[in-house]
Length: 187
Image (cartoon, rainbow, N blue to C red; front, side, top):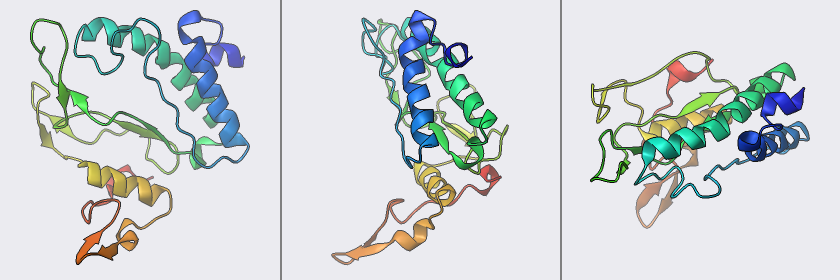
């Protein structure tokens, strides 16, 4: 059953499926932080950082991760672990909404991009934020990276404002003395 859930019997999903299954087993054994990374494998040019051949690369890479990550979420939920396990999926930036040059790629784009969270106190089935028609800028309910960090810390049981320390006359903290918890995300 786990083989099918995680895609372990299919060549394109096997490797990432094994990584996701290992992550679930680590969490099940009490490991408190597990990072799963997918940077692409084989001859995928530049992986998710697609400055060229974006459609081809992302189609191939998405096929590698879709079933395993769905399997991980389903498995965590079936075992009653998802309610206490925060799953975060995303990168450090998005891609420009238009092709860059003539190489069918896109450049880095921090102005409007998507991440998703599941389990661990996150309200299921909601979307926060909207972009303009091109996907270039946020037009409604912007969640700044500082807000995301503050929210993640809240879900982990920390008040980000209490993590402030003074150094050389300036206040510092993980959310750079900014950020507000996105309360709509909390279950």
